[in-house]
Length: 420
Image 1 (cartoon, rainbow, N blue to C red):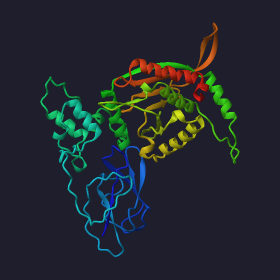
Image 2 (cartoon, rainbow, N blue to C red):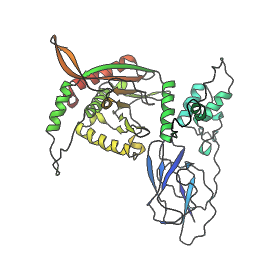
Image 3 (spheres, rainbow, N blue to C red):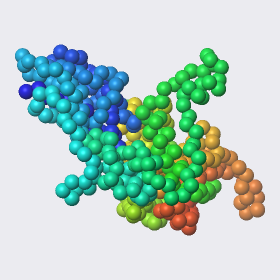
Image 4 (cartoon, one colour):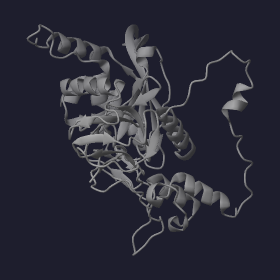
């Protein structure tokens, strides 16, 4: 019997996947476990292995095209087996490898979203939150996602159909490509298509600014001792077999460690917002924004409060390289308890960053700038950086945010405290 090649779910929020590359063509002989095709998600490109060995046939989703999670994108036949007409499946799967079934190609009917036999209706976390905020019973909303799963768009449509109890605000203007292009002379611009990553960044940051009550706290940190400590540690690094130092610490490594240690000291700030509850975390998992072409990734340093500076430095270099190559896996960028965005290398002295829900804080780090500061009544030239903490006021109060930032500054000013 033919084996379906299923488009797997490789990300928690993934509803569709785009096949960016097939490693084999129709009619090729493939081995079980061989790289079969690549999926381009909102965050990364991942290779999917062949679920069985045989002859690849009936590729129904070609390069550059998308399909729902769980649908069949091709079939693998045994040598000499008769080839049936393709009919893509639509049942979703949850594993990150291509799922195996042993049925001939046949359509699968999607299950309804309404609760049955006491089970909760299938819905995305965002859909559930929007339904709670709008006062809509989630089970009464028809789902348009895979197997009838209720999506955020379904909830918004249901909300629009619900009679308003207060006068509605005028609708926001709809921005379309054509309407914007008409504002400019033909031939004076290039059109750059919005890819999945950019759409996700736009949607999530828009949602964050519209639904998360941000407030901001700033401190200025003197780096004199930190820079001297960094220089001494780098100078004392042992050499490897190739004669190169085994480590080279950056200022950002100290910032990651300081933020993690500060969260450990102020556990009330090491939280995430969960809608009807607040999760207070036992470890400090620090996400670090990494810029890539067309967007950014935020790989996470797990248990950073318990790791040495050299371990943090090595992990950050490896994760940043994987991010730029778009090879991160979900476990490497999901679930951070805070985040750091550092634009100091671009000469930006101060800025504010947008919180990435469900995280409740993000630290924006500016450039190191030389300034005269008073020391014993005399002006002394010192290197300083300004850091701004964005907080979600639903989970972090002003005093707690201030306590966290105070602890962070103390560790940056006296970095030996990180080792205590």
